[in-house]
Image 1 (cartoon, rainbow, N blue to C red):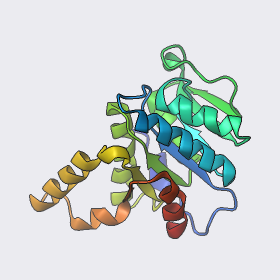
Image 2 (cartoon, one colour; image 1 turned 30 degrees about the horizontal axis):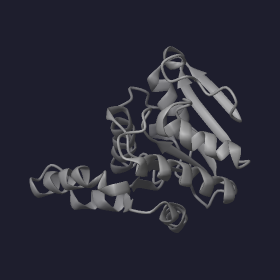
Image 3 (tube, rainbow, N blue to C red; image 1 turned 30 degrees about the vertical axis):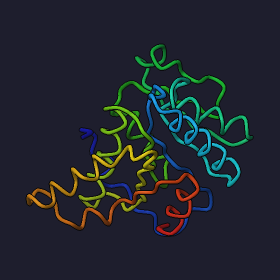
Length: 198
């Protein structure tokens, strides 16, 4: 969890934002199932069509690059946030609407939080998992009430949701945690779930 406490004082959204910006956490690789890449592209297309801004990790590769490129090609807006030390490894996407280079991962995650109205987790690795779990932790602690959506392509997030149930049944989490996130299987269900909360 970030050592930066500034999110602890961040206000919850009091009303529906006039311009929706959604943070997408996803892999810097594409994974082995082509359904993951298809979903990333479809989500980008949907964001652009609905005038929803994409906030993401700033890279040009993997699912993150596919989603950002699709939004840009469809005339949408993209805000990328990447730490300086990852500009080469993740190939910073210079051609997007806004690219912010931060000094650290903590600063990156805080800025992604500050610029977003909701959070969506596509398939990804340990970084994706860490980022979405941090947002879920902050929600559980009452630091925000923004929507958190797991886009469960090909059942990717099933083991994590089962782990949550395991933690609840063993007394390490309260069942109320389920009210802080939603799980959807289809790209077209993401924005309606977000809008139902905002």
